[in-house]
Length: 401
Ligand SMILES: O=C(O)c1cc(=O)[nH]c(=O)n1[C@@H]1O[C@H](COP(=O)(O)O)[C@@H](O)[C@H]1O
Image (tube, rainbow, N blue to C red; front, side, top):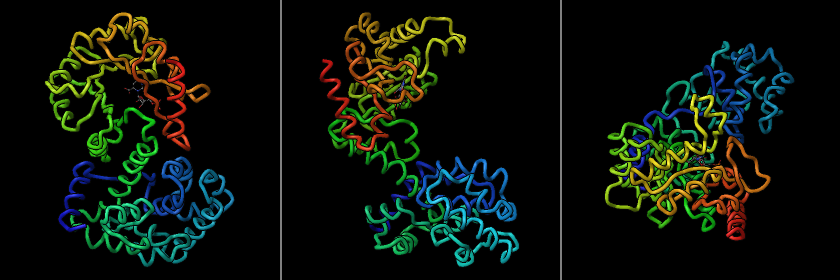
């Protein structure tokens, strides 16, 4: 990759996320060393779950060493390779006390003398705790360095040195965070779209991916002819929604969600303009809510009536459809026929966990009650084989229709 392209790449990453942060939980340089050492071949999320309680009682080398290997093991048992990691954490705590007055040293060479701390861990600590422009090459960065041609290399050190050379100095400090976050979220999302392949009709991108390259992913999918569902759920004064939707039209999506309030819907329809490719969907009542949730929110109305009221707003504003559970689909179809497309989340194959969804039906039930499209997330994304999971749902749908 040329220096000019590398500059453009980092500029885009920096615009999307100006202040990237580590996702590991830590309280001070010492707990950062421990968290990074625990994170080898484990997810940050898994490490954070364990360290939340551990760091309450041990956040200095002295406290950690006093805890001892056995007690520490009790806190980190859920993390892979915990036995070896417990041994290392106790040993590195003791070495910090013996050789460094209990302080975390600020050079890579000194950090690397600590048990269980290699070059990658030392680079993360140097970068996050002490603001050094180091690049820690993990599996994501190694893959990205090679795949993009940004810094090809046969081993992590070659990629690290290559990245140090090609990354413009002003981006060096944040480079490794951007590349990790990109690798963790966008590559993962892209891998899922590849894995689902032709077994999915639409690819839904939510706002959680927006600051992490999701918009570019939407553009790329759309450019290759895939149908893209932009689940951004806009909720604002009409004029702002209008401007927001106008910007979104540049991405080339097919569905866009907004809250089903009249002004919001009208703003969205105006912002969409004359190109009718982007269909505006009003989210009626979330499928994670039930009648009880409405009562708690002080809404004294039957849930189905509220869905129908919001569907009415969608029709009045000239929106294209609504997001509603299959429990209300028949009533919406009866009232609005084909004037509104019905998109239905809260769909679970028989026996699958409902997760946080409350108004849940099977794919077949959803289609039989009048849904035009179903949304299935976790049962496909979390499956070992997303393609087979999506295909099984397709078969269920085919049998129902
Ligand atoms: O607007 C949505 O897409 C939506 C509306 C709604 O009422 N319920 C609902 O679950 N969704 C979205 O649909 C997806 C459902 O995901 P799973 O529950 O994993 O299948 C999630 O991305 C939700 O954000």
